[in-house]
Length: 498
Image (cartoon, rainbow, N blue to C red; front, side, top):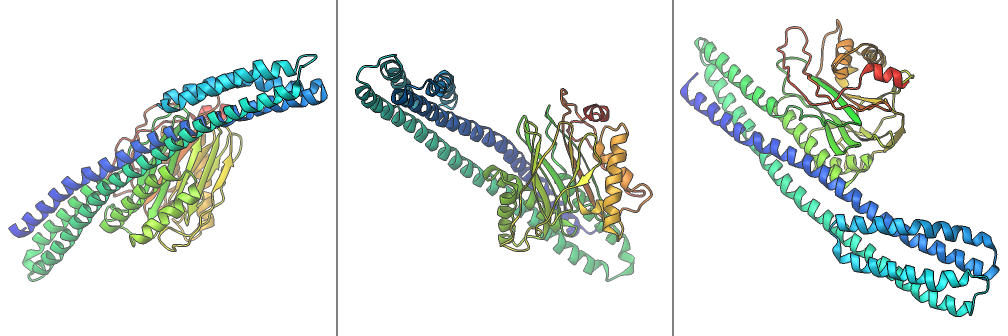
């Protein structure tokens, strides 16, 4: 290898070594911020709900007392008594939430509302429910003033909650913008390094083709290209999956060939709370450095959009518009949320093969799918589907290489379903890797394959083990074993749950 080529490639490798940590750090910052933002947003929504309940319960008391005062029918006292018993705990919970959120400016209004409610009970409710109330109309007019005061106080609390919610949204958007700048700088750096590498490789090939005696230099240039490609692929390896007691993951990624190692398949799992996760799998058209860069853009856009919109269909539409503005490559994807508290999968697809659902005691089945791939049409719309399931249920997401290994897609889907059933029938530490092994047992791998499983823990069990898993590689390909963090649901647990 001549000195000019050597120096150029060393410089490119240094650029990659500097830029890759920026991209990886940006990804981790997005993941960390997603979790915190969703947790705070959920607490604010719970606080708003408590404020609304406090208003409703006081209104139920007032309605019951007025009905009894007008008719002397004891049936009106039942909703009054129920609302009266429930109001005090709700107001206590509301005060606790305001303190935990640091909303001390709303506490005086809440305290005044509590005093108004107590005064209404002593001076209005108790006299009107006495056997012979004195001047009921006067008492009711006095009670109306107290109720207006109570509602105004609770409205002040709700206004404070609204301001806090708006501030959180503004902070989230500001943080996302800063993180996106870091990621964009990293992506541009990688793209620039790739462009410099391609230009230098073209010039090197032109020089090498001038003489047959320079074949050794051509081989050296190829080896350097392979090393740079491996550096990029290692930079874009799947990030560790979350470890949760209620939701478990397994995953595998297998390149078709050594030459196609830098591909566009990926998967992600992001912890939103201890019982709720975001799961994504996608496939960028093509291979090579450009596909790898496009893949990373799509990954970052999907995770970032999840902060702003928890609806999978809206989330895909938002990312679709962003990728079109970037003139990105076509991307197919499935994104969804797994909620272990409700045992619910909520998902949307964009030109991607259908997810597989496995429930205890039932055979695996394909779910509904549809929608255009991302970065194809700016007006594309994506439908959100909700699957209500049971403890021990598992969702399998995969890229098209898992079903398009032959020309018959229907036969490929049946092979996938059979592979899922066989993987569940055998004890295995990594269900995703076992599914891949059963699909390609004796078959030639013709495309990259990524498989991600998301499972709810069986009822009465917890999980949180660390899983060692890596890519399964076809004969003749170099192994890329690594360790990914995830949790495993025992197959025996799945059987017991059924």
